[in-house]
Amino acid sequence: MSASHHKGGHLKAAHLKDRGVIRVSGEDARDFLQNIVTNEMDLVTAERAGYGGLLTPQGKIISDFLVIAVPEAEGGGFLLDVPLLQVPDLMKRLKLYKLRAKVALDDLSEASAVIAATDGGKLPEDAGLVFADPRLPELGDRAITDRDGVEEIAAEDMDAYHSRRIALGIPDGGRDFAYNDTFPHEALFDQLGGVSFKKGCYIGQEVVSRMQHRGTARTRAVPVAFTEGLNPEIGVEATAGGKALGRVGSAAGGRGIAMLRLDRVADALAEGHALEGGGLAFTLEKPAFLRFPFPGEPGFGAAA
Image (cartoon, rainbow, N blue to C red; front, top):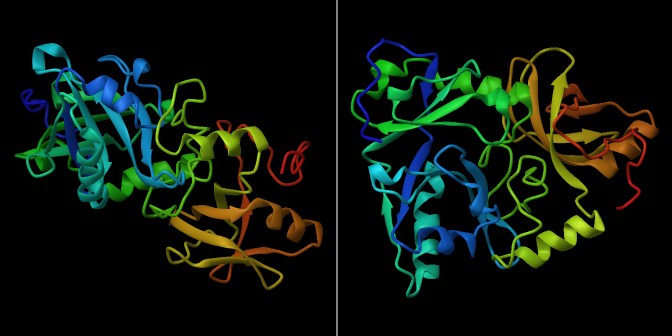
């Protein structure tokens, strides 16, 4: 991570000031994480980052994160690229589960910075510990680097990253779903490689498995387009025909992510009602990575 800062001036990258970094190291680090997080840690290598989360025993998301394996030459272990506001809670939970495992937990948020490509492109190897965003190839590269001097290399506005993320339909915790109140399916973990249905036990697994097998995830964070091209305030209620559908989260450039009860959306559309968020009409947009049926598509509601 303490790689020399990129010498070639500005990158098409933004410093994501809303992200923190936790290091999980020691000889038991991989097994420790494998036993508690939603994703398959065996797939996380120095060449391939992972995406997952830590859940409550009731299956709600405490935090989600990107997991990066640190090369042995740089000390080994793993770095978690975490929403900054979730770092204290996540550190507390990790310490709680540590027990006698040979694991060290360090909050590196003060000295580290997360940068992300704003154009979905690659970052140079000397930008820090560089990795491809594991959720969707179109998100491009990210890097964990030293906080000192980061603004000199990653001078793009953070909004540029979020605009791209929203346009691609990728939900962001705290903006598009609430921590401690959202199931992994609702936040699209199952669509973004964030949950393994093959691995052994982890915290909250029974609930997640049940939702998967019964197809009971009626609420989903889905991309929407506002017909006027305007953006509503974050968190406004989504309604149709006077009935609540859910909430609109982050929005940019007339696009947004909304946490919606899709069965209610289907009913509203069948009755000819317009979908609205904060008084602005919107339609659902389905990106290629979403594999579940949308309202109006064959198979919708079959398993619910």
